[in-house]
Length: 215
Image 1 (tube, rainbow, N blue to C red):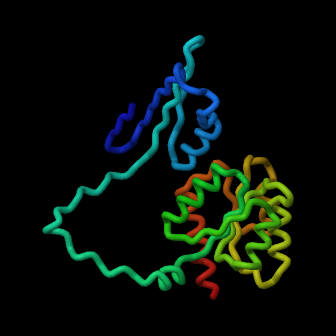
Image 2 (image 1 turned 90 degrees about the vertical axis):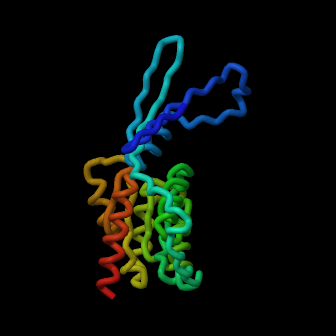
Image 3 (image 1 turned 180 degrees about the vertical axis):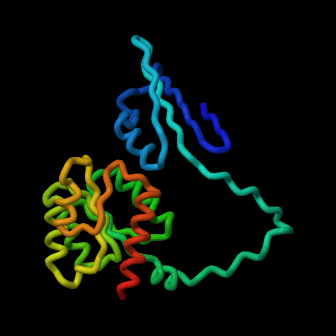
């Protein structure tokens, strides 16, 4: 069941598991659902009844959709730019993250914004990708296996040719001293998970513009 309004979309869906093969059903847990919804600026609500179950609902903000333009009134579409030109103008972002849900959400959002994305799943891969790709910006999680984001940032910053690359650190918990540790390791800025996508986009834009102004 889905309900829509002009300013917000509220989606509530009931799943009947009575006649289903439970072993073949994968449903995101409450924490994953809350993180994904909050990334998109929404809110999650839950109603529970003992012996009956729980019902989750969430609100997602959305802008007004443009009305379709009749074909005979629409202007001729502009000629598309050559793919090589688009690639040259599109900044390359290295996303270093080991959480699959975050990787999917962040990479899809940034690609929709026009950025090119290269992925790394730990600090060691982030260092290797930085050397191989030389990204325009690095988005790196602090907590990762094999080598955490703090050590990866220190090693990246130790190489002078990467000193100019903006780095945004993603912290899982907003603990006292987290920001200072990230900045000391070489981060240009930090954001707390779950990351608000609009805040992420504005932070990336500001850092890239500051980088361009220094060239």
